[in-house]
Image (cartoon, rainbow, N blue to C red; front, side, top):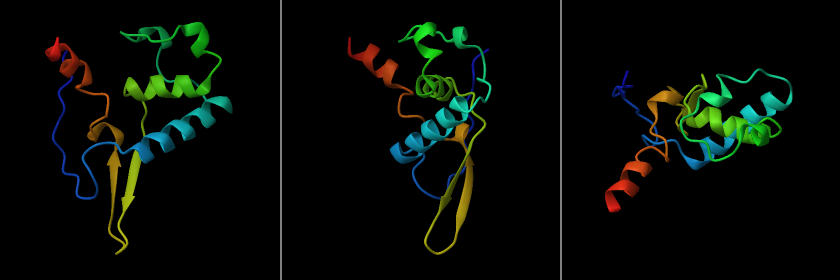
Length: 109
């Protein structure tokens, strides 16, 4: 089944996950994993693996990055403006910096 991306209205900030949000999500999730939180999803279920499962099981940061790339994290991003206006955005609404990169590389070949 092909996952269709629905278009949602993002009023505050870019439509893409910023590098600051990316770093914050990875850090927070890695801390949760290091404190004993269960890993979301199956580590062996990923299509493309850049590292082995044995390496991943010891490093919470690599596990967190894998979970983020597989889009299994139920995280909300809170973006606030100085005037007090804010918007809570689910992580799956935002474009990820790595999405579309593979297709762009394949088109250049």
